[in-house]
Image 1 (tube, one colour):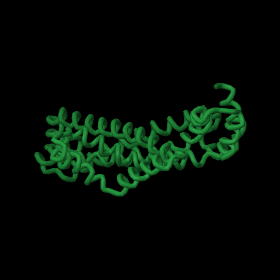
Image 2: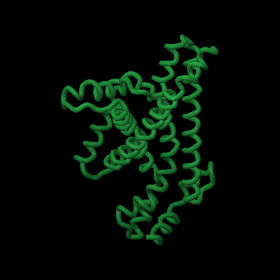
Image 3: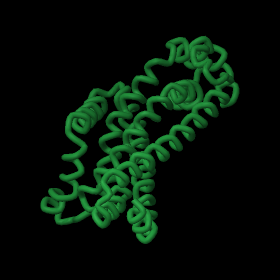
Image 4: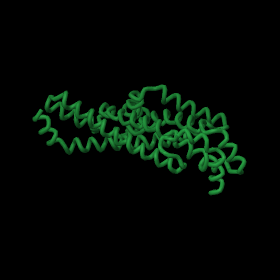
Length: 244
């Protein structure tokens, strides 16, 4: 075991770089997934059938196909089709964004639909435009309900980043696997990976919990008082109407 830690110390620059690649893939992939979640989720609620149809086709395709295959297709197959080759990190970000964005769109759609109908009616009664209804009344309430589900999705995305190792990306998994091959310490190597991913996941959870508490405070809710959200109907809409 002493050989493992001495080798780990020697290879620390590579391990640190691999950790950064993992964090980078997680952050960029989650940002792309968040963007696609809102885009596809809002499209799913459109009154236009073609818009809803496009959203449904995209969501079902990326939810119904394997992330593993999507990653391999972007890295190995797409260059043969287009003549343009993406870097392993870009392939990972795009694959994670598309796959988890498809799942996230259902979170957005469900949260928006769960906002009490009275909120819509109060906003319409105040003669608010559809844009202002969504921005001032509907989305702030829906966002609070989205955050716990988005937290789970973000953790799932983080746990998928070791797949980058399969397309030769120099992520944390690749760096620790290199140390394992030099020392033969399989148990310690994979235990280190378990601890590292747990620490990253726990840090993300804490950040998302902070974001949820902030969002609740902006609605005048106390942490853990999410059930009160459904009782704030005309009052929320009236407040939003007065701040337009």
